[in-house]
Amino acid sequence: MIPTYVYGLVAADTAIPDGLTGLGPSGTISTITHGKLAAIVSDVPTERPLGTRDDLVAHESVLDAVAATAGVLPLRFPAVVDEQGVVAELLEPHHDHFVEILAGLEGRTQFTLKGRYEQDAVLREILEEDSQIRELHETVRELPEDAAYYDRVRLGELIVGELERRRQDDAVAMVERLRPTVDDVVANQPANPDDVINAAFLVERARQREFEDAVEDLGREQAGRMRLRLLGPLAPYDFVPRE
Image 1 (cartoon, rainbow, N blue to C red):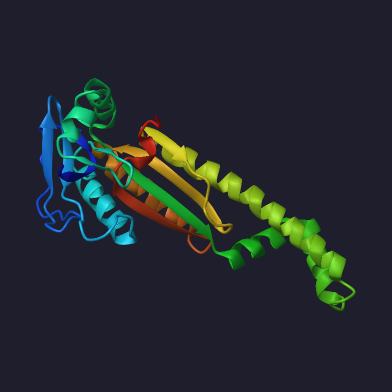
Image 2: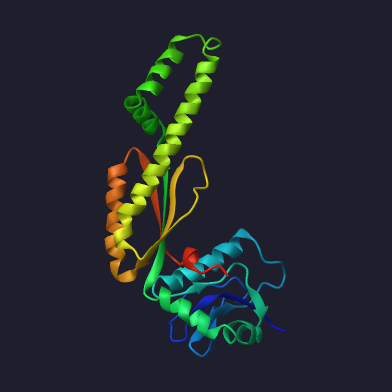
């Protein structure tokens, strides 16, 4: 048995970029082909178990590099099979299904947009625009700390509620603003309370500049209020059917 690490699948005629480094001791990336499919593979570390952060980074780096120029179907980390099983267990029994998925990803890549509020700026915005919160805030400032306890609790609840409402409205507005430039969108739940948006976009490479320009426009409009970060091109992790 020769353990083999599988990063993802591509069309059989896909050119794999030079200079990629695998997570195995040889560092060599190659492909195993069957019919219209090819699996991107490397050897596997033998002196330790898989699962470190460096392993995950290597997995994603290989897939993202391929995704920059070709359609790729990423496999979940970590995917280890016997070398003979790459064809017998993966490519052959699921050939037509994987070919169909890859056809839907061809010519497309993923970008992920993340955004986080500049808290001081958004709090000022809330105080300027919400008279109830502004008046309560002024009341709390004028009272001794002990006397204002319940007012402070109420003020905190109102601010948190308003932040959540704005967060949802802003996220929806940004997604809808970018939607005309993409083929598909997956809106993920933000990981942190300060996060506003964490959305994946499936973008045609021919329209990549159009999409990036639209994101830059958003960034200029939100400058000082929100910090946006665009990641990509990436392998289309969020657009692989969950089966």
